[in-house]
Image 1 (cartoon, rainbow, N blue to C red):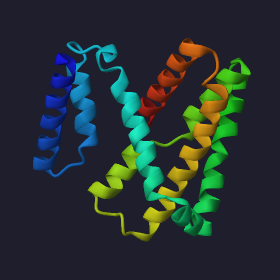
Image 2 (image 1 turned 60 degrees about the horizontal axis):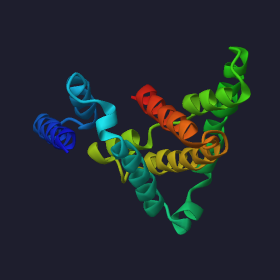
Image 3 (image 1 turned 135 degrees about the vertical axis):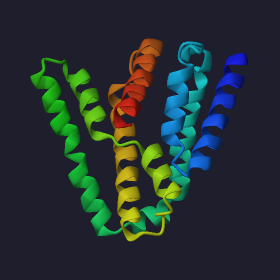
Image 4 (image 1 turned 60 degrees about the vertical axis):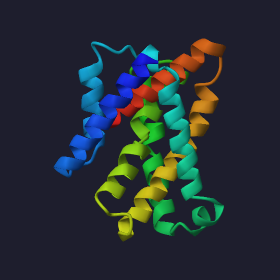
Length: 179
């Protein structure tokens, strides 16, 4: 409980500092985590990153319900499909590096996926939600989230607790690489 209280206090401080400087909060959150790393073990906050990811995906799903998803412009769909080419290309790179097929697909996922949280938050923070390009960007993010969820379900969810830890680690590595 003390670890959660310390993390919450640091996040509140980072948020206040970012607001005061009129800067997006996400880099300040990352910096707060880096500064707290000598005192906080990630295991002390174990369920929180998973809960955050689940809430993010749920909120994106709420924003892009079936009606809005069907309304996405052809431009967003085409951009999402072009973006999806990074998945097989990343997989080929992994195979070329001598990884097994499963590991190569996960590497392809790391190469492919963008951080929905970071990008969506920046769109809101920079007041660009009404901009015409934002629909395309958010459409591509939804496309990525749906495809990577299938990839992780297929290749990351087998094998019990050890595989779930590896899947969580893959998501954490993906999030770090995207920042």
